[in-house]
Length: 496
Ligand SMILES: NC(=O)C1=CN([C@@H]2O[C@H](COP(=O)(O)OP(=O)(O)OC[C@H]3O[C@@H](n4cnc5c(N)ncnc54)[C@H](OP(=O)(O)O)[C@@H]3O)[C@@H](O)[C@H]2O)C=CC1
Ligand SMILES: O=C(O)[C@H](O)COP(=O)(O)O
Image (tube, rainbow, N blue to C red; front, side, top):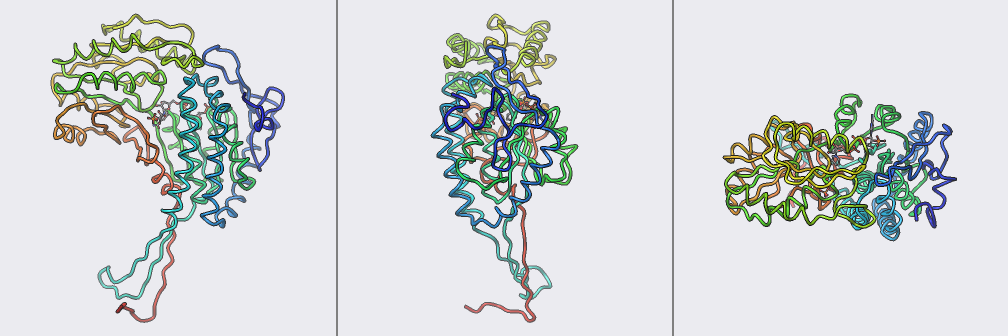
């Protein structure tokens, strides 16, 4: 159960504490933020509403701790990360329980998220040891006009204090996808968890605490993003921001100072279906890609662009599978669970109503109880409908019928998003041409979009982000290059 056993020290009364200087503390604000259970719509947990003064102290400690950490041998950093990964996996049950209660993630998927996060941390440790153990050696005579008088040694060094802000939908996994690379690269880390998902994050942070990381190296500041977010992201002590979320990221990138940014934002992932596609495979991937975790994934299939000649058959196959989806509470491991908040449910409903008014075909009856929205396939969606362009982050998948491949590519590229996309066809040559034409960070051939496995590069074009994630890319992004040049008085050429 949350806040018990090894997690007892992270809670006092009914409010979870925040983590700073290797200790769990109550905020001087005396205020807390309520976390609403999306299923019951009542307060499930409370976390501290941290103050700006507390943020200042955390930044100061992070700066001091980082200096020492950067002098810690790489193999020791890796060893501690492996330890944290093992502790996290050992305590997967209580952490998964938090995910079920805070974000209504189905029970089995919640466990998977924690285990995947442990594996991600271990992989960071291994990859970091490999790629940070190497540098470059350059000699000057390769550039015109130079003799071999300069030897340049380059290595990757830490940035300093990394600020990590993950979203609600993968609070643990998208937190460790920032924490692991930051720490192995010699940075300190300040985590601002999403409000929904904060308690799961606090439990995860306790696993790092139990692993024995130095005081101040990792901190976790809680509070509403709308209240402390700007203070954190504009704080002069921050040397790098790694953010995953929605439009907030666009605003942050305009306000942040001269620091490297890693932004993974929204998406409107298109699924282009050609006439020769295996329609059973497509239907299975629309269900998995569009409806898993009730469509609350940045990589969810958010619009199907299917050739008219096979559209009827595909819609029929998808509908048959939608009918089999289990709808209900996350505790029962249902496929479709309540969406994260009432405002999110209202937004999704707004998209459905707009589509109804404009004449979309509702393949199922629209049904909602509280935050629970039944899965819905909308056929004959047209470009004048909001659902054709906006991301519902809910269990609604629109289908647009197209008459040519060019029409599909045009719709995909007209989006302001460019995260992922997918194409279904048996013709690999056509698939490659379409992949090259789609303006998205990744294109999946014959499978639904996905970020994982976690070491794959993951990046969004246009409003979908800045930079690239994935373990290797994140480690590289959280370092800078340092060069040392040895200048010789006379040229020296190696003769063997
Ligand atoms: N490309 C990707 O990898 C992914 C993208 N997303 C996108 O994220 C969105 C849904 O996630 P959601 O959590 O609602 O996204 P938000 O952008 O609302 O929130 C993301 C994080 O930002 C925090 N935050 C809010 N305001 C500020 C601020 N002013 N300054 C700094 N931080 C702030 C939030 O805290 P708090 O919760 O306290 O408000 C939360 O931790 C969707 O658009 C989805 O597509 C989601 C997952 C992955
Ligand atoms: O936030 C998200 O939606 C995730 O980045 C998606 O991860 P997945 O595609 O591996 O489920």
